[in-house]
Amino acid sequence: MPMIVPRTFIDLAVLILLPALFFVPRSLPALEKDYKEPLYLEADSAEFSEAKSMSVYMGNVFVRQGSMELRGDQVRVRHDSENRPTLIIATGDPVTYLQLVEGEQKPVEASALRMEYDQAKDRLTLIGQAIVFQGEDTFRNDRIVYDRVHDRIKAGTIAKGKERVQITISPWQR
Image 1: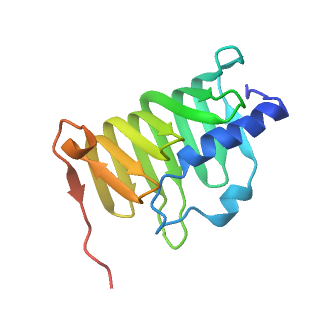
Image 2: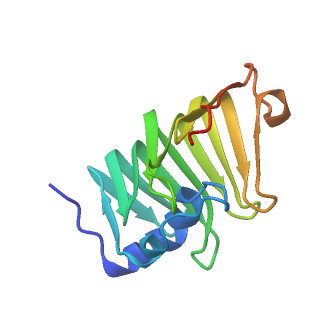
């Protein structure tokens, strides 16, 4: 049964989850209409602690806004004293992300055992069995870091990973 979240928590979830979920490079922007769509959140349970400045969504967590979808086992959100998001951590076996992007036939898809979004650094980190599918291309590593400020993706030892980076680039279609 879907969880109904009070309007104030939906507003909070929009502020918290949206920056983290649109991690595709700016050269491939998410569908413009997605940002205007309502946010839908579903979980087996939710806990909100103002004293700890933390929100936790647990059990089959599903988040959708327009064409964007995120699925995981748990999503934790830490906020500052003014209820602004500071850190979002999604965990699962795996956490999955999907979103259509302007000008692309296929959606961008990503998965990892853990996805972390640091709002202050505007950085998304995929940890553990991380993989990003963009069109026919794939990007794999144990750690992929997307720095939105510098529009830069890092993987491997430069991102504090331990495995070799694996990239598959499909031939250009004419």
